[in-house]
Amino acid sequence: MKNDHAWKELSGRLKSSFQKKEKPISSALGELVQSYDAQNIALAIEELETEDAIDTFKAIPPALSSDVMALIDPDLAEKILKHLEPEQVKQLVRKMQPKDAAAVLADAPKQQQKDILKESKTRKKVTTDAEQRIVYPKNSAGRLMTSQYLRIPKGKKVKEALDIIRQTDLKEKVPEDIFVVDENSNSKEVHMFGVISIRELLTHEDGNDVDDVIEKNVVCIKATDSQMDAAALLSKYQFKTLPVVDKDNNLVGVIPVDELLKVMIARLRSVYSKAVGTDAQKMAELSPFQEAKLRVPWLLVTMTIELVAGLVIHRYDAILQKVILLASFMPVISAISGNVGLQAAAITVRAVDAKLPGGHNIFKSVSRELTTSILMAIACGIALGTVGAVWAKHLPFGLVIGGALICSMITAGLMGTIIPMVSKRLGFDPATTAGPFETSLQDIVGFGVFLWLATTFQHWIT
Image (cartoon, rainbow, N blue to C red; front, side, top):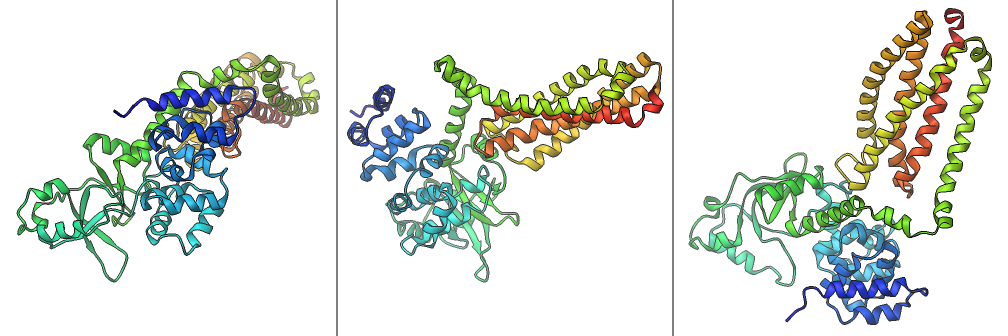
């Protein structure tokens, strides 16, 4: 009887190997995994830290590596591919099923993609499939679709359709649904006419027209829609495959449920790890010196930027000495703006980490946060400006206070949105970098605008 929990045993053995003082050698890792099948190796690798998973994959015997790569979650696969030699990636692609090879190729580094796509040994099915995928953004439905699916022209009899299916290669994995299409011979356009499952097709007489027994009201998804949207549709309708169309509603591919399931499980695991405090546990395992070493650089960055804010304040010493009341409002402006920035940063970090829709779309996220910040800034600016005018018994003083807060809050909202996304793309932890940069930059802008306005209109407020 097959042991369904063998991967847990393997995962434990691998973790024990990496916890030793000396890093395990490749040959030892290879001996450890060689007695397990690809499914158990893939599950075990996904339980490891990224660096350990990469080392383990490199040690997998060549006969198993392509099967394991096809099973592990896409995010981990992408990280592993970046650490493999170009020739190793080429060998993987050659050995894998066309659908799986295209998925791997779409996640490979750009230069490796170009080299493999140009290579004459790369199968046509793989290049066609991969080239379709890489046109679309990373977290879009188009990245999960495959062009390897069963389709028949409309107007066929049931017997003719079954004959077409029998001619397919049994060794190649293709989705089980059959799509009836109307192909334009003069272009690449493929109009979807309907869909039917193989099981349902077998229940009809050979002489029946396929067009009369197919489902014509087909639920589909745009290639540019998010993978989360695709998951929602597959979950709601419980399809085996989800057809993908382009902006002109031409059928460009299908998403098999197993491909989407693999991606969603990986994301759920990532969200769960963050929810239960994986990062906090890692920090707890560090010595005080190691933890300080990680955190001090960002504190020094904050200190440096805040010194710039100090220079800005120093430049306007004259107006502060002249209007002492201005100093009373500086902490208020800093605190309110800081909260706006931290809220924006927290929302953005959560979206980026969980890969929620829009999390990686800088323009969309910045536009949304700009609108939100402006609305909040106007409301808070009017409130604080009113307080300032009443306190100083002078309306222009209130206008300066309100204007400065509005500028500072907008800056904080934008910085809290942009910095986490830029940090993520540069390879830094957005949760670590967002705070220092956001608070420091909004202080510089907030204090600078505040004191500049006060200086410009000092003959009105004194």
